[in-house]
Structures are given as structure tokens and as C-alpha cells.
Length: 484
Image (cartoon, rainbow, N blue to C red; front, side, top):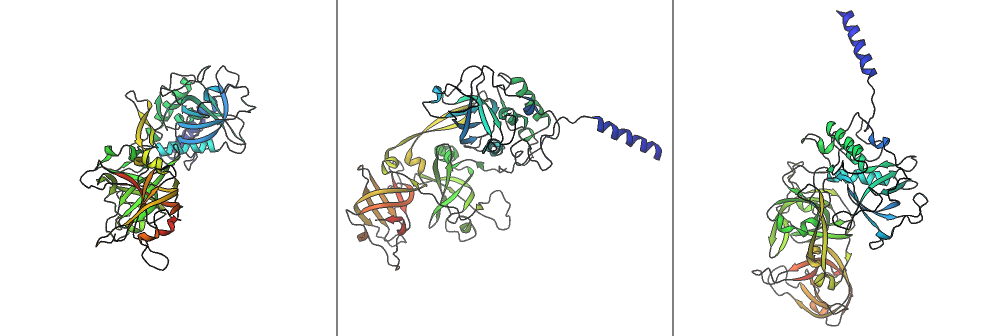
């Protein structure tokens, strides 16, 4: 029996040794040796074909090609690039089609990664990180080339983005890698007309292999994505929340941002949006809690906020935030990500806050499961309500003080004219000078020039029963934030 066992084991080992392992896509620690971070979680590929290495860039083909650098990372399947106009790799390329915008908005062919800039989907941020990490490897000696699917630069249905293959060569490497196929090979995308294009057969094979190996999007539902919170709260960007807030009333949501201000029982959390290069904020109602949640929502903290969207006198806020010390890992907790972050006060003008309109774009999925762009028209003031801003060169024409028996007794309303004549109000908390004396309205007489003021944009409704009548003002809570 022992002799038979030894013979059997020897034969089994020989058989295993004879099986060729064609491709190891991920290291034992879950990282991708070819670029990216393996998704920061999920099921990693252990064997298969490396379709990315096998696919080669043909610089002599009829397709359009242009060497580029990254201008802006948007998400897993959208990147903005700047053409290298004196490139020796892709010389004499006609770039006139990009002149109107000045850069290339690239929508990756064949892939549709989960959302990471609006309503956050599972694997969305991880896919975005994968794309970012791959292209970052091209700095300091690497190269990126965009390629059309045929002999022309083709735009998508929006007419503003171009459908492209992305080739990247990390610094020190000799060959270009096709990032579109690599995204599919690692299971970070759904199909998007994957078989109906120049590299369709390779792209489809890479996707099928990812499905067979149950990678990331195709892993079991219980697989953890460390960049996504599996909870009842809808995870989204503050920009998405500001532009679609009616869709989330009384719903639990999760947002991330930095605490830019705290007024008595309300914190203001703002998040930077790369694509629009603008901050968006949301009020977070703390109430009169005196527990640990006040520590979490302290000035300069980067936080994960979980709560319910409520309508308060015509404006919106997140309410019901909590931190349960007995259940520190509860998905309902509002938690600290990092501390001592800089608070950015974005430059703004009274005219923009009062009168400007914005047209903001969001990626959505259409009826056919393909990505499309939705344009949301929104007043600038609505978009930046609860956001930290700085205004300059205002002239006071009237200052009044609140007279009441409440804690707001002595709060100031400083009515100002901007240089272009636009009127805006600076509303303060009760202010005190360096000696502890209350600042009165006499400190800001008519004609006073305010060189700079920093505060939070507030949508103020004078008549609590009529939310349709409102105006925008800037709320200031520190005397040091007003420079005259």
C-alpha cells in the first residue's frame, strides 16, 4: 500500500509539472506586475493568457495615432490628454480636430467601467485607480499613445469625446501595452461593443477569461472591494448630490469630503471634482450632540459622512449622522479618514454666485447598457451652496445687527456691492475682537471696502413658509476672515 501511494504521488506531481502555466496576471500579494494595483481587493487572476503582452502596437497601420500626456484623470474609462505636438514617436499627425477644446477627451473603446464620479458603484474607484496607476508609470521616460479604431478620429454620441485605444509604455519598458484590453483582462469593465472594433477578438477573449477566472466585477457578490462601502447608504460624490438632490430626499447616502467650516450645530463638508476643477459642499446637521461625532466633524478632517438627506427651509443637508463607539465598524458610522487637511476657499465672484448658470455633465448608462452623457443645468449658487469661497473687493452700503434674546443677538448682515454692481450679503456669526469684545455694526460703516472675505455660500430663505423666495449670501464665522 505504501509503495502504491508513493507511485501515485510521483505520477501526480509529474502530471502537474507537465501542465504549462501560460500567464500569471497577479503577484501573490494581489498586485499586478504589469501596472496598476490589481484592484486593491477582489479575486485575482492566477493563470491564463496574457492578451495584453501578445497584442502589439503597429505604428505603421492606417489608424490615427498621437503621443500624449495625461491632462486629467476622470475615471476608469475616461481620461483627458494633451497632445505632444513635437512628438518624434507620432510625427506629422493632424490635430486640428482637437483645436476647439485644446485637448483630447478620450473615451476608451470596448470597455465600460463602473461609475466613480457620480453615483459610486462597486469596483468603480478601484477601476479608476487601476487606470490611474498604469498611466502614472509613464512619467519620467515612459510614453502614451492614443489610437483611433480606423483611419479617422471618431467621436462618441455626445460629439465631445473621442473613442480611442490607449497604449502605454512604462518608464524603462520596451513595448507598449493596450490599456483597454488590460482593463478587460483584469475584470474591471463590462463589455461595450467589445467585439465590434479593431481589436475585438482579443478584447473579447480577455473579457471571457476574466469572467472565467471570476475577477473583480465577475467575482462573487460577497467579494470585498476595499474602495467601496457595502451598505444600505447610496455612495455618491457631493457634485452628484448637489445636482440630483431631489432624487435622494429622505434616502441614506454616503459622501466623502473635508470639513471646511463648523457653525454651532452644522458642519460643512466639501469635495473637489477633478473634471470641473471645482469644489462642491453639503451641510451636515450635527444637532446638539456632545459626543464623539463632534470630534469626527472637526475642522480640517477628511470624513466619510453617512446620513439621510433632508430639506431644511428650502436648502438641503445630511441629517442623522452618528458614531457608535460600541460598534466602531458599523457601516452607519460617520468616520474620520484623515486629519489636519488644508481648507480651500475657492475664488468666486458675487456675479457668479447670484447670476451664473452651469451646465454640468454626468456619465450615465443608457437603455442599451452603454455609457452616455447627461447634462444638468443648475444655478451656480445652487451648485456651490455649502462650499467655502473667497470674494474680493466689496464695498459696504449697509450693515445691520440682529436684535434678539437668542445666541444670534449681534450677528451682522453686511450688505455689499461688488465692483460690477452685483449686490451680495455677508452674514456673520456673533463676532469678537482680539480683546473679547463683541464686534458691532459700527465696525462696517457704509463705504468700507472689504478687500477679502472668506465664508460658506448659503441659500437663505427669509420666509420659512415659502422656499421659492430665497437669495444667496456668504456666511462668515471668524473676524479674521474679513480683511478691510
